[in-house]
Image 1: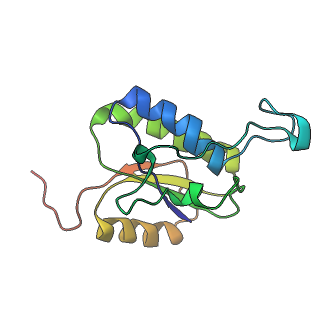
Image 2: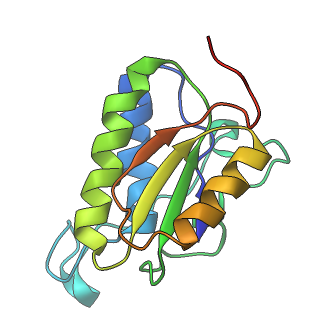
Length: 147
């Protein structure tokens, strides 16, 4: 399942906090007895977007937040983050590695790219690479040359 992460703040610390507070509970809801609401299986209540910063270019909330309460992930997950500076790399890597451990044996990986061809190419590659999980891959544009 490909999940685009949109609407995070530009500052790395604020983006990490927003991801962990708003997006992560939608991907991986707390297990029974965890969170601040032990009744009905436990877990914190879902957090839904409340501002324009949590909407994509078309004005729709990210796919993980569109359809009501959180749903546990039941298939391999590929997170796609928009490009940003290096200050976001550490928290993104830690988040994907933590999700990969938590959701094993499902595979969880993340990309940083706005290039649809690059995203599709890596998505196709990962479908044939069952041992790859917990990776954060910043991508260059497909066909781009480096110095």
